[in-house]
Image 1 (tube, rainbow, N blue to C red):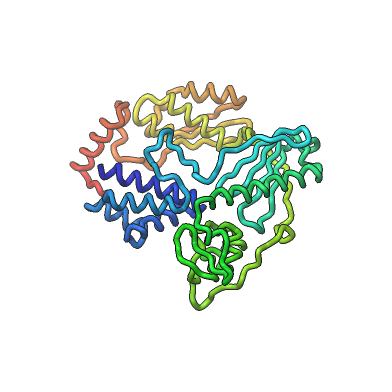
Image 2: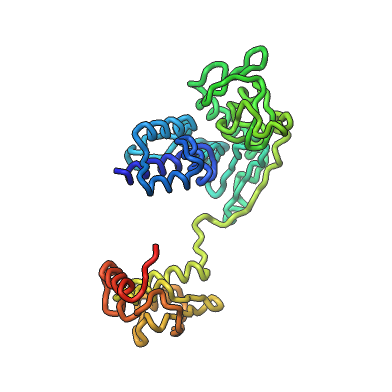
Length: 373
Ligand SMILES: [Zn+2]
């Protein structure tokens, strides 16, 4: 029961992080503070003792996360983690070229064959074009006219997404009154000057309402906009609502195809190690497979060094050899003395059941040594 409730809290923390674009640990801390803890660690420490989130705590956490615009039904089928305010991508066509346009965590992304255009949520950040190197010469996005039209489509989309998010907001949140007073759409409270806790910018009511409560300077989420400055001593500078001229200029990158397999040491050793685990029959052999040193020499030869106390001297790693053949690599094997993972290496050489091995190992430590947690 307790585990289930903690899992629900962790899931909510993850959703909160995604909805607010906060770091995951920061989001967990925010959630823990909402429940009266100083940080997430304090909450998990309490959960190790006898505290567990009550139904009221969970309801409160759900409401907190819901306000950030994330879905909160953690029992939803298929582990749906999409957002209420991010509509599904749409298809379109421009000058005979098909594209797909969608929003991901506030950024608008338009993709076509071999190219992507990303408009970051932050208003001053440069739009980024990425072109698959195979289409570097022929991509339509290299045509400035085509690109200008795409940028217009993407900007319109970005405005529409924010407007959709705001449909349920009180009127005072999307339009300040004559005195410049606007109402925070998620947290409530009215003021004519607002403070971004992300970049310390000072924002007027009309500015923040017009920008759907994202900071006009750094683009942060509405939950980072507060009626009080983060630090009273340094209330920050008034922000300018940047027009398009202030956005950093567009960046074009020629990139590798997303589906590129690099047969480097990391990839080769992962495949070889996976095969070694297939070759391993006893607990010791599996430990040896996990701990083997695998290096790629000059892109031609894979060198495997086994722990001599764990891997039998005359055992052929046939699966690993077969993988090396597929990769066109020679194999060199070597034995060396490693620091032992556990005392009594003999225990694991006849056993293949890890639970049984663990039990025997713990008994041996209890009898002849100590176990610390
Ligand atoms: Zn800001």
